[in-house]
Image 1: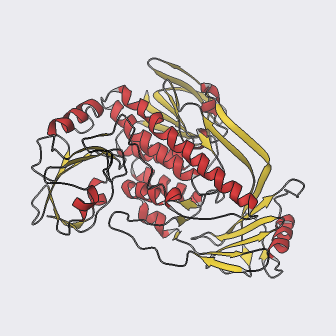
Image 2: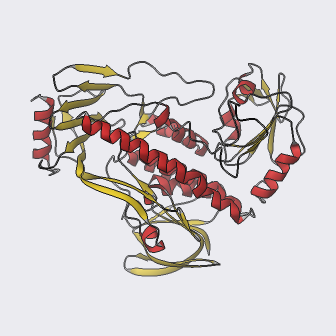
Image 3: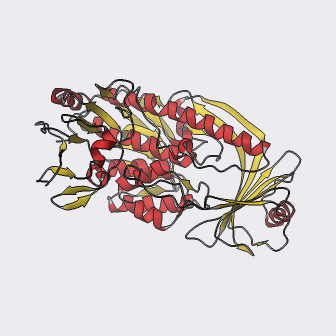
Length: 495
């Protein structure tokens, strides 16, 4: 018996596999496709996802194949051109990745597959999940490869298999929402002559919008064109060129035969539950919505990041009740994402053009779980930072091994305790925060950035979860609260 069977090897399934592999949790990752999926599909990586990739040890690869804060050149129907996003966005001590990154989704998958291989895992392509049954003891699933069926058992099954999820359908989980057939868009990857790659180009027209976004680390652009009722939806070169000519008002931009095309239809749906017994859903299998706001791939990645450490903890002896917090924490986030992307989609339809704004609502740095059963603190409601919030980064830290930032110390998928007073004798990775100099197990916060980020006093204890959120804060320095939390929620994962 394996511990976790993952169906679907997109960014969501790959992230989950990497988290489990890093934690030493046995899994199998299957995907019905014969190989990696072509096409750019999603292309926006939000700052919070970059922090996830930092923790997984792949952020430098991701950044090398993308462009952060790409400028946007918009041409209105009257020919007026505006250029936005040209101001440089600087990192802050508490936010290392302040802007969104443009990179094709296949690059993210490629990077995660490489990391998974480094961790000893692999994707079983051409292997379709056909059916499954579950009992109190586990899940029995039938997978088919090259026409040969195999029955395998696992403690848990996670459906990361997209909007048409086999796992969701067979689990009997309702996918509530609507399909808007009148809202469609041609999406394609295409080589382009006569257009620079210095910005994301957008044109607004009475017929609708058309966009050409250069995809970094490739020689192609992503083409997007809205298709209203009565307009030709054929995603072929001739129709795509005709749409571009009319809506851009230019005859000097020439498209080549697209390498990949898709006709997107608006689906806005959210499952009524994320779990059915030993079966879980993540990513598009649980929530689908418009690409406006660049939230889809990112939300799936963070679903898996949340679920992964909890599965690992329970596999190592933590209370099974920990898994109940997955839906409690992530479903409200998905509901908010659907509302945000739907509002952005309506704006785009009304304004005859995609409205691209990268702000606090899209960067996902404000996502938190203050109402979660996993959030404990002794601060009042007026506190700027509380348990359940994203754990902020901090620079200017000195250790015996050299200068570090906080994310360097918390990386690795474990609980980390920051002690601003005397460190308690607790079996968890602990850093005592001092002024200077730092001894083994200590961090010198010489600039005070760490204490400021956490609003820490002389006795404060801060416990950070494996997924980079604050589990517990005690300004009173209550070591017993920390020990009790770990005993209740973590089991043997720290030993």
